[in-house]
Length: 341
Ligand code: DAH
Image (cartoon, rainbow, N blue to C red; front, side, top):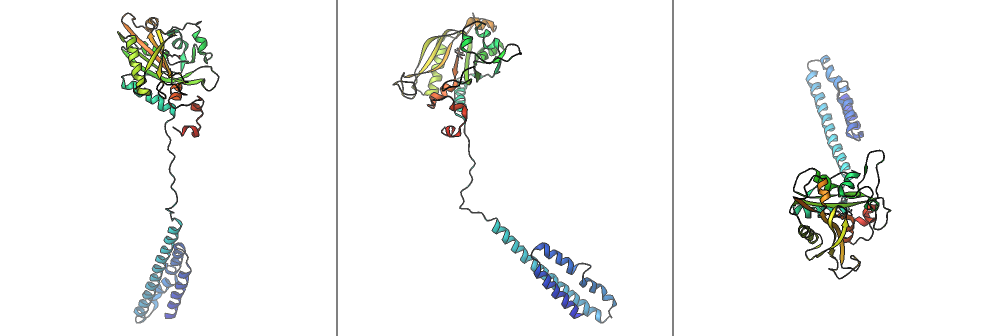
């Protein structure tokens, strides 16, 4: 019996040393120590021994079992250590490798300019209005005192939505004046930035889609003096404290009188340079006192209320501010260009 048990122990030792991982070791454990194993069979067969033999053999079987169990435990902890070491070696991090920094984006120069201008007017108490890019011809033209055969329609040729009443892609943000006045809430102090469309060929200064910002102030007793004051403050905020403005007479169908406003060149302070094409001035916007006819069409009594309006092309402001010579760069989304800002 003693030999038998020794043999079992030796077999166990040999089988354990062959197990290369924990899974294999488990399989060996089942083979050597389970209910069906030879060792268990010997324990069970003790009943057939004489009362003298029983305690001796019992002790021996228990000793062998516990020795085998110790062997398993030792092997398991060795295998665990080995597996852990292998895993650590595989997962080693080379701390000298350069890190992968996520690429950070930033605002597009157009967005930066629009935000900048919006914030200036918000600071002056203006509200922001938004309206449709697919607009009624009525709001884009008629209500702005541009009747059907007016030559201004030729200058602002656009894309018409066929078979859908009088809808078109708005050529200007000015229809927002009408939409805001029509709500009937007075006084008004608002700006309306947004995309506008014209059927223009693409070149360095033209694009069939671009951005404008409209402004409108309506209250009792608003004069051209208010217009000049507000827009002079705006120009200083946008281009710098020492910016001067000048107003040149102009014509827009929806304002009377009308003007164009220039600002002294922020780059050369009026001396003449590339940005201002040597004139010392940069053209910034169109403006004027809202035409009484426009007020009346919107249901506002022009004998009690008056106001001023202005509109500017935002690409032009961005191009001047960042000295960009080709409008197309603002739409092409070439990151080599955009990364400079
Ligand atoms: N909508 C005009 C344009 O696209 C710009 C403009 C001029 C807007 C004078 C105005 C204004 O509100 O008063 O050329």
